[in-house]
Structure formats: structure tokens, C-alpha cells
Length: 243
Image (cartoon, rainbow, N blue to C red; front, side, top):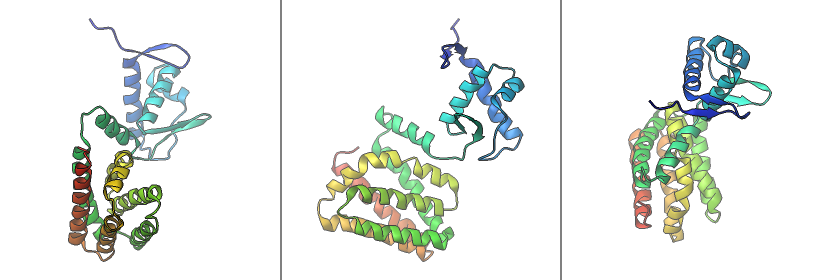
């Protein structure tokens, strides 16, 4: 019979993983059953330990695991809170699967393309005036940053994340945000491959066409322009040897 997996706490004590896993499940059930929302404070570590019938060491390990998954926010000297959803945990998984060659960059881009076409279409229907202005302002800053690739990359990422938020579906924002780590690894390859000023300027013009379609509430054109943008980006990376 296999021995249970053992986890160690910071004070050197060993904990059977089954206890920690059960505590993780029970804490998630507690959040659901008591109707806690993002930002709400959980009962104290002691109170939860007593409620679950486990030691504080087990509860502490469960809190740490849930913090790594961005389900809880924990910090020294304050009670655990329910975390707002973000892209960090999913981003870590995507980064891991690419580095371990379980997924290729092109496979990631293919999934991202599908999501971003839909988010652009929805953004054209649902965006606020402030979001439309933000997209247009971001494009203007991109044109002004042609000689500063690092700033331009940050603006490019911001542009796509604004569209995802403007879709009105927070899941798109999380999913698109999770691709940031891959974009940061591949963006400069694509930029160098667009060797001429004209090619680099045309890439920004493509962003401008997307922003304009969203601003005038044209979902069909917004989706078509986003498809054009992604097809160009994927072709550039393929020609640079990124598969």
C-alpha cells in the first residue's frame, strides 16, 4: 500500500497531504455556504481550525495553497480575505505548459485568437465611452512610442486587456490577462521581425482600426480587424521560427 504524501510546514512539522486537501475543500465550501464575496474577511485561523476539526498548522497550509491559487489573500498580521479573481494562477499554468513543451506558442496563440475575436466583437457592443477613449488614447501613445519598444509592448498588452474588460464578461479579462506572460516572451521577436518603420507603423495602424471599429459600435468590423491583426502576428512569429 502506498504511503500518504507528506507536506512540511515552516516549523518543520510533517503533515499528511490528505488533511490539507480536505481543509482546502472545506474552506472553499465555507466561503460558498456563508456567501462570502471578494474582499470579505474569513473567520480567524483558530476559529476555522476548530470548525474543521484540524490543527492550526493544517489550516495555515491550506490558506497558503488557496493563496497560491488566488482564492484567498493572506498577509502577516491580518486575517485571510476572499481574493478577487485574476489571471495569475492561469498564467503560471500556461507558462509552465509552454516551457515544458506540452503546448507550443502557436497553439497558445490559436486559443488566444479565438478569445480575442469574440471579446473585440462584444466590446464593440458593450464598451463604455471611457473604454473607447482609453483604446484610442492607447493607440496614440503607441504611435508616440515607436522608438521605445519596451513602452510600446506594455501599451500593446494594455490595449488587448482593455478590450477584454470592455467585453462586459470578466472571464474574458482573466483569460486574456493570463496570456501576458507569453506575450512578454514573444513580443520583441515579432517587433524585430517587422524590420522596417513602415511595417512597425502598420502594426499600430491595425490596432487603430480595431479601436475605431469598437468606438463606432461595429462588432463585425472589430472582429475582422482583430482577425487580421492575429493572422499577421502569427505569420510573423512563424517566419521568425517561433512554433
